[in-house]
Length: 451
Image 1 (cartoon, rainbow, N blue to C red):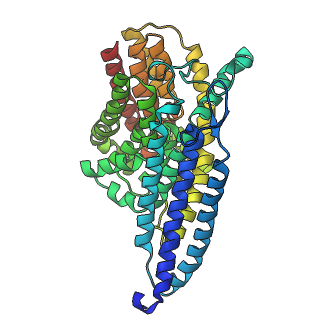
Image 2: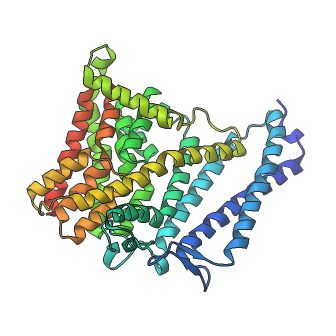
Image 3: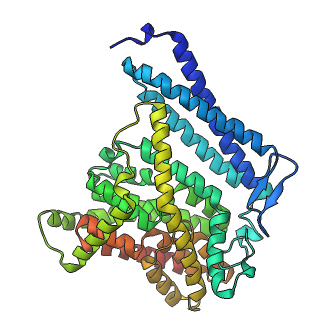
């Protein structure tokens, strides 16, 4: 193998210079997009969206975007050509790829916090702690009232997607980066130890999945060797504890409800799933020995198989680590595109359905029966990631504090499709039933506390 010293030093200086320019250009791009959403850099903006602003456009944005995109493209092309020669000479660039993944991840998190932390143009806030008009509790970026009455729920759902488009974009980029850079994490998700269980939760933090998407991804991890506990931790923690969701919870919810959303996510996503895995381990072992579950399991297994074929969830986790920075970038962009195809339709359709459900919900009252009904209904209902937050805001505004607290726990955690996928993956309906039961109990307890 040729030593590093035998290669021209100028090649390394030039390569690292281009890598630094690439990172600077990426940061400029992310920062400019944040300003387009928030409008805090310049004095004058053309505002798009009414009555709430969707975009803040300035003439200065165009040259900034051009410089950023051009810098990214030219540096990527140079680095790709340089890496061919370096790799052919036997030089390993895996360390550089790992460092790049960490730096880009930090950039995305910084962009997410800047997006949240600009008070001058906090579009999510309307009145006291973000309670805005409409059943979703958000400011409106489109004139929903101009739509016919039967179409207004659909318009509200579309409005929700428009208002959170930037958080959604960063969530997709952050999640896809983690999926690509996290190759090999499955090995750390093996075993029944609490440390392995925490790895499942850690893997989920960057993933903006709703329960019906987290479950098949967890199933893919389980098939690749992840143990039951880490798999369940990933499935529940992804919709409850992903970074983007926590940022939106702090933005939209009153303080005590934001705390119950976060603490409830930790309790359910980490500790209760660990208890379920310990209790259910013997059931999974018996299934691996050949016990038959009957028609219910067969049907759930078919649902899982068809769902996986439709969205190819089993391909979301990379099997190998990227061997160079440009390989990481290429896989990241490819994964981001695949994640967008999976998540955006689910988010949009789910948001629209959620608004119809909000309007159709009966007035049960802020009592134990209302809390119990919400906990049961919410455990089975599928909602897209993050939509449980404006859903709860609407309930809080109506004085239904207990029902809102229950909804914040049960709506994101699991759903009927999610539980069916878990049953199909583990070959045990008992595991799914126990998981659904503990979520129901946790939501009921939270609702009673907040009544």
